[in-house]
Image (tube, rainbow, N blue to C red; front, side, top):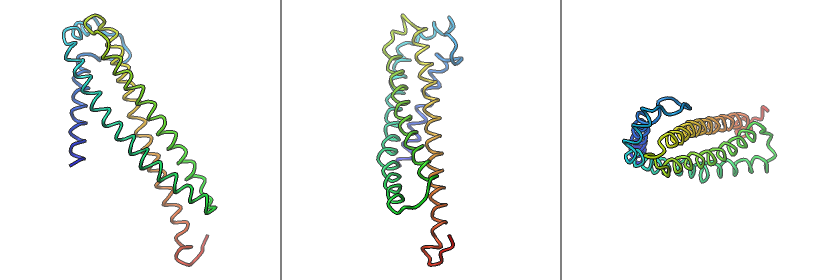
Length: 183
C-alpha cells in the first residue's frame, strides 16, 4: 500500500513538473523567450500553485528518503564497521565504501536544501511582473532536482557496493565459521 501511494505521489510530481516544463522550461540554461514570458504571466497563479504542490510532494518524498539514510542505512553501516574494527578484521574496501556512503548522504541533504530553497525563491517571485526571473529560478530548481536525482542514484549504487563488499567478507569467513580455515 505504501509503495502504491509513493508511486502515485511520484506520478503526480512528474506530471506537475512536466506541466510546468511545457509552460516555463523549453531549453535548460537558456533565457526565457518573449513567448514563454507571456505564457508565464498568463498562467502565473496556476504555475505558483503547481510549484507549491511539487515542493510539498517532493519534500515529503525527499525527507522520507533522508530518514531512511539517516535512521536505517548509516546506523547499520556504522555499527557493522565498529564490529569489524573491534574484531581487527582487515576490510579496507568495506570501510572505504562506508565513508563514501556517509559523504554521499551528506551531499544529498545539502543538495536537497539547495533544491528546496530554489523552489521557494521561485514561488516568492511575482511572475506577473518578473516572468524571466521566475523562469530562471524554476530552471535552476529543475537543474538542482536533476543533480539531486543523480545523488540518489549514486548513494543507491554505493549501498549496493557496500552489500557486495559484505558478501565478499562473508565468503572470506564462511570457511572459518564452518570449521575449515582456508584463508
